[in-house]
Image (cartoon, rainbow, N blue to C red; front, side):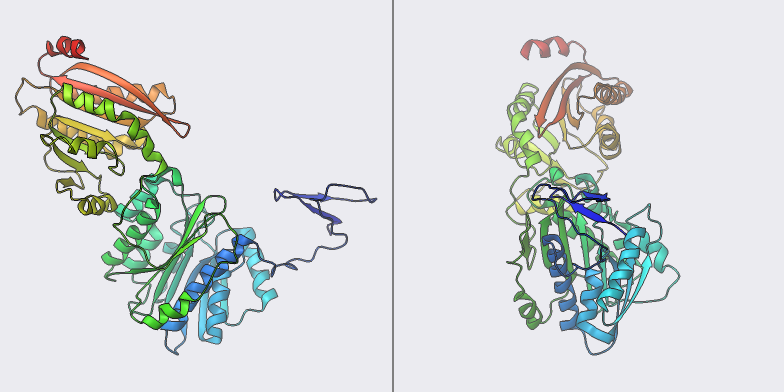
Length: 478
């Protein structure tokens, strides 16, 4: 029995044994006697209201497009069972919901919620297997079952926000293993009235353009569905909001009946007061893109990059720039330049470049790359730089040896260092080792530190030649 439970505006909880009344500030509330679990569950906070709204959308789409037969749903749910309960309220006894809970404490609460609210329909609540690996639980849960589901919802609200690189990997190779597993093993019924939804948290600092995080998530799910033979999986709802970090709920399906969209479009969330709340009933890509906050740093090195290209007379340029918003358009303005855009396998960036009229685009590692200058601007540290770009740098150096000796070759690379001198030296040793293999002299090098949003990025430039004497001329020009 808790004699007194004190809650303040910061959501901090304290258990106190109160022997006599005492005064305190207005923001504290005291409840004398026993605490009744779930007594105020119907007084939803703005966050719960958003989750209930998204759950209602998902269950409504399922109900409006499904025939009278009994359906089966697989749900990775939160502790209040918002999606599972919403599906049961729509279908009643015509649904079996297989719900999984991520946290052991949440599992206890979810069972109490299910009993307290007396949900119609059958909800079997299970603890998630492998709690240490939050994005691959489904592989263990259903590998021994021969079941096909009509609706699947994945709630990753307890998973740490995905970084920009993780999101790009998701779009590129389906690194969200649950999603790839679902479509590869055809756990979702392949008919027009089956639905798939998920909720994810993400970091906005790694966005290349506004809402690029959502673009990457959608592209990853659609690629996984296409590889599993599901064809085009349409985005029918996107609900964005901010709690601890930016979050998004996305619903996928096939809207082949107009009355389904009309029935759901009447739903309103005007009564909800939560930061960043927004709803889209479709998702267009490619579209007119606006640079994200992380792209501002590239404005600061425009003159530096243009100067390096002009002084070295580099006209055949291969470049990777996140979003291709600032440096690439500047280089394209010079008609003598031949620009090849390197997307690193990012299909969203490839589609965006095609939409802007670029024709020379390299998505994955090419078999050959002949360029006077290789410009690699990125938002990663040395560890991931070696994974993402070292094979391309090695290929570039291999092709240098077949070109005329009376020429300079420029490599400009950008990494996040956060004042890490060791990372700087590590990158330098990697690049110079590749130059030594091709008997190239490093005739000039310089560095440029860019600070943006409290983070430091190092832009390191190297000039290589087969003739050491070019170094003195280079330093004189600079």
